Length: 385
Image 1 (tube, rainbow, N blue to C red):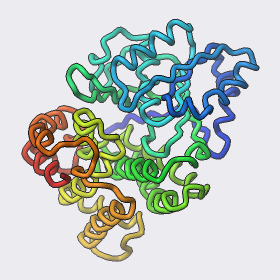
Image 2 (image 1 turned 180 degrees about the horizontal axis):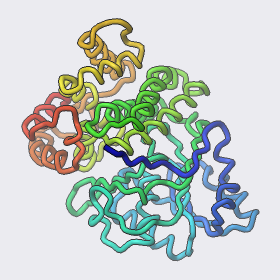
Image 3 (image 1 turned 45 degrees about the horizontal axis):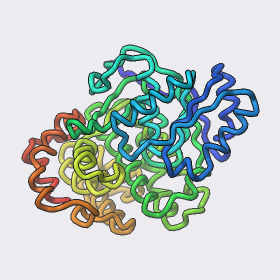
């Protein structure tokens, strides 16, 4: 059997990687730069700091700073209209997963016909988009190294997952210094999101010889650095480790796949506007407990990679992993679903059947070690309530 592996053409990782932007733009011959970011990041002055050397070098610069959490189709269309107005020849995404996902969609829609929803699923985008440079400011989604974008269709109230090699950033500038200011809560949510990427990539039915080492490296780095990054936000070694983990996890799952956690997470985001990292973190322990019987050896390897066991049996290793995931959520103060703002229990129960249907329709649960039925997904949702 053969496997397809995609990754950014260039990854520059480490302190100060953001300062390589001008040289990378020159390398690919770009002259009209279109930044895509969100209002918060734009308000920090980071984009202006990145743009000033470009202007001094004679490049034209425009900024679209209206990306919202869980970007929508309209959000993408608004950005595309601005991009076309400025006749940009490169897109630079600065921010977390939402900004990078929006930028991916904007870049490919410049060269492909609307509507965006016709590209839902796998490998349906016919034309290469504009070059995309991704500069992540969180260590979580790994979107700087994935060929995936998730855009919310507000008309149908679903999160659209689109996977295609044309979505892969051309260049990723992974500068952990940009994550030093992340608050504890965000560090926790995106950190467990990163761990979820590593775990799901490794236990997926599409796991392969190329994705496995990346997934295990991601898992190992998270086990070494997440709790320190949460407790000591300015710890540079921990922040660097988590930034690397996020990038490796992104490369792993985009070339393997995510599984049931992500499949169940997307409907929670679409229905209740729950942040992606938070919903993954809430789901990970419960879904892992459900999935372990389908891949005992792989989950045991994960436990050993995390240093939870050494010579114990596979069954003991899996139990240690499950205990660790529960304890980690408690330590990082990950709430239960019932404690999240804006989620009414009656509405939640009313939507259970739709969320289970939408989760299965996303395609991710079919890659899980145990493929769930709709009723099993409903039961898992009820467990995390």
